[in-house]
Image (cartoon, rainbow, N blue to C red; front, side, top):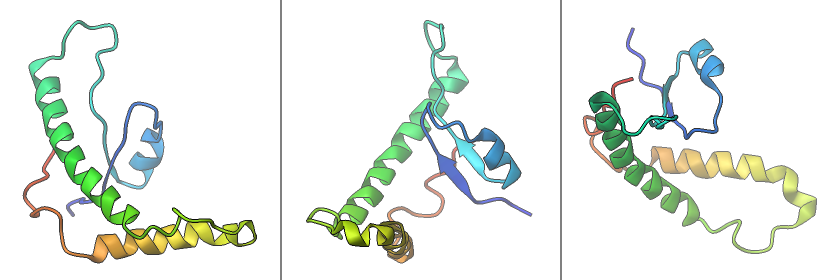
Length: 108
């Protein structure tokens, strides 16, 4: 069975064990860590991830277009914030694709 779920994270997200347990690919750009430069494989991976981040920013723009949290939000209804974000993100995920299915194929 092929796995299609993946999470793109940055350096500070330490969720490797959880992703392994849930069989989710963890996509994290390489970091230099006391090296002067990346290896060829790391440089290519970094390039692929950077090009994918553009698409993440497009999704973020779609989420922001709902503007529900840009105005005053009553503290008495703060318990709804998580549900509202889940619904907004679900609507963005179900809307038209921002790229074709073969455009994001980052090797893990």
